[in-house]
Image (cartoon, rainbow, N blue to C red; front, side, top):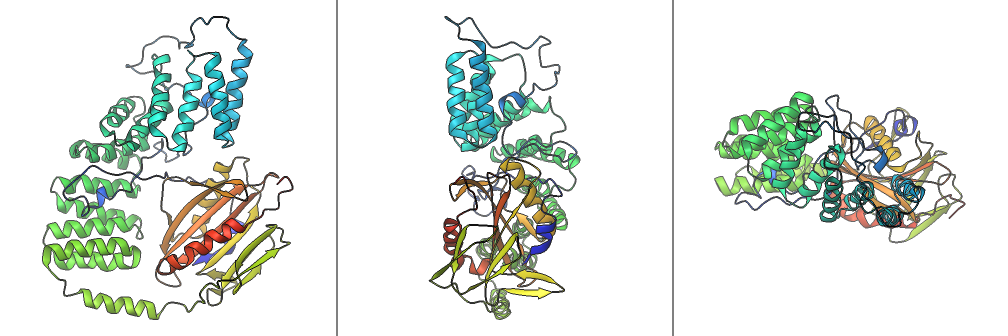
Length: 500
């Protein structure tokens, strides 16, 4: 269920923070499919201060990165230029201009252009560290982590006397994404002396140690995260994982209970409790977590039920859950299936044209237009609620960069719809009408259907400085029916952009 109007009215009042994306595969383990802490979907964090303020979800551009504060491990010498004599040295201004052009393209998300500029700068001055940092950043955001690590290491070799904090931090993340956990731990551990209050750093250190099966070291790092951020749900969950692997199931249960109390929609907490109860031979308690997961996360519910069945045999309570699921289906709103034919709408201030199923109604609210099938919308005290459909709109952001605008919009949308939670730690890259777009997936338990719902937020910047967004919503039980419908709608959009 979407609360539509608060999003429109409060879209850019608060600056929000996204979480990171991509898929990690943990090391082989005999119990890997049964334990929540190696379920192949956890991502490293970005730098986060003790006050909870996070940096961007990608590395800063070259000239915005500063050396970390000197510590006992850093030589007390002036920073080297990284430059050696070059035959027929080209004009300094050509090199500086290439760096500036690369930074500008990188900040705008034009990574191919940025790469070309940094490569040109590298050819002009092959012993300067800055082009290598720029190239490392590009390969990192593209997900080419081996190449990113190579470039960061080249920059470090050219500037060995200074700790360029973001370079080391994202080098550690690049190792992590390659499953080079031992190398990642070395980098993260080195940085803890420079940044003892970076919760994101200790979080990553904890995750890498989990995958290395260094569980006491993981627990130490994750306890530090909780000291810095007492409401960090994921830190309690992963600390529970460290205790689980050491056989301390009671502590695992307590930590997962704490995570669930901080965020009742956090499905992993119930899954972790269920597995710990299995190890304690507490079948009834494990089944209680299964019931909760049926509502929050059906896939994890099935995994937990499989683990219960393997330990205790066929569950006597499973048929009762079938009745619960049947009752849930009976209470679902009666919504028309999407028509196979599509209708094109045009002339809106929000878009030039868009195509939606022909049996969907449109609700035009000026800078917001909603499309939904019959039975998917309702009015409650002057507020419109939707269970299926798409909402499109434009707003004037407080920034001219897509990433920052997307971050602000999603965070304000979450404030207006607190039952939703991000499902990843970063944005996916996409396209809308040949514009770069960012995509964030959300989910939570709907107040209308009582079931898990999936919400996807698309954002792209128009050349006039406005932000265009599209929000799709559908209950999880109907997701497979609507997934291609939503993609077809996104592909059909033509924006009101006179330069297209």
